[in-house]
Image (cartoon, rainbow, N blue to C red; front, side, top):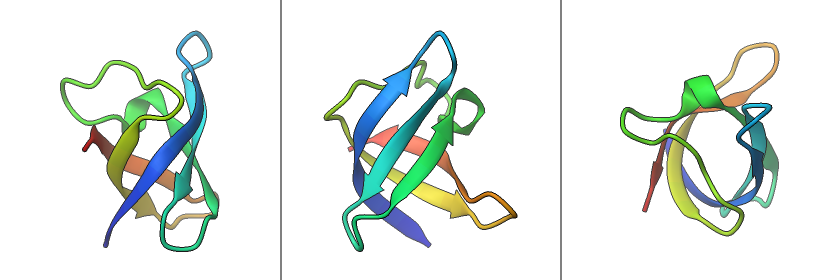
Length: 66
């Protein structure tokens, strides 16, 4: 399932940040490895689409700017 949301924060040096889902306002972790091909970094306030890997620690993947 694909979600939309807004980047709350992303630290390019650490390679980790948070996205707030539009649907339920929950925060989802995003790591550099979860960025779609061609997306190198994110900025706070960016609107994005993404999937969620529902493993032990849910994380955003295939993150692309809208």
